[in-house]
Image 1 (cartoon, rainbow, N blue to C red):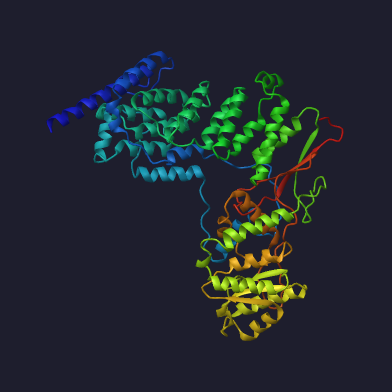
Image 2: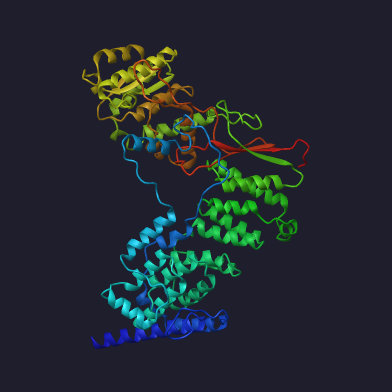
Length: 618
């Protein structure tokens, strides 16, 4: 017992000496009693020497390492920037469930109707402050740096609160207190306990990075490198972010490559790529970009923006052994990647793309903000945009994948039975090709009045029949039992106007709907409010899921408004064109995000039209 206690004392003293030596050499601790000021003429050479001494004693420090959970607000807060866009123009509300902002507008409308409208969400930075405040409890931070005695008195006044240092630095974080106060807190903790925990240093580091105190970050880097054997992802990310915006940016490359336990994040790569581009080292920038892609990561949009802004002067480009043609090819490759992965640039990025095209010497590109007509024509240049319809090869590929992974997937018989599925296949085989497949229960449930469900379905089927279409209605067997919801007369009329197949009540309709629609051919559409996200997720890869989404947008019919007696049944418009980055050689059309309201299953409505002058040179 006594030996163990003595060992702990020795460990504490060695760790304390390690930290104090480092503080003195780095000028974080001008005196032994206060960390509230800093000598700008710190001796980096002294810091290196002390770091070597710390490594001799770092075994004592490791017992005090408190590593926070990955992805806490301390690291995440630094990457939460303002993504507001400029250049917005008021648009008419498009009639499509897949149009950007539709989901949010619908949700807001429903909230107003039910008188449950919530207060607007606070800005991300405010949410961060609220969370940090909650963590800090009722602890009130001081408004000036305190001496050790004053900190001790403050701690005693709150009943020697457990984890006082962590909660206090949380309060300093949320209140935006000056860095000198946090320095004095660290001095107090070091003198009281003989050491500083990893967690406390990490949070102090976060304050430094958020406040742009890069010189202080260098000092903390020396301390943590000397006193801890490894750095976690959070600390490494913070150091990369800070070093990347200084003349010591090349050290960020080393930190990036030292992150061996986990793959660096796109943000980590983006910070260093931006630093390399800022200092004219495009070879390093593109090498890191290639590494990012090889690791299966998706670059952040501001990383692409950095690459499109590039190095402006020709001499700098040539001096870095990257020709204009090679640079141009790399950037066009980014646009191709956006096309292949159905990525939509935000306004800031697409503005940089526009500026880059217009700056290409001798090519005379002109960019304009525009939109598309319902027939799929660019309102600026009149070009016809790519069709939403799948090619024969694309359709066959999608059909095969849906049959394998959704219709015949390993969980298909959780949704139906082998006998029922085979019976349905024979049913479809004996019928002519359908023009429209209707999810009967889904359509009927569009009317909240349960007594009018069969009437709603009958109205939709009657409208499709009036258009001369061959209709299949999928329903469930309980719909055939006369009830208040399912009137016998209405159900009989539906069966006269359309082919009908009623599954067991426990079966799921969607696999049957997809099978019948795809088997009928590329002309066949389906009626449902279901966005099929679960089924799309069953597909094996991103390319197939994007193909499914393209087919869905061109084939799904969604009711527009309520179905009521005496009112014509209307469907939301189905786009004739594909919303994707596209080029014809002398033109580019790039759909872009000009709203923060778009969900993952919606597409933008605004485009950048780029046209090359007829008398330009290659």
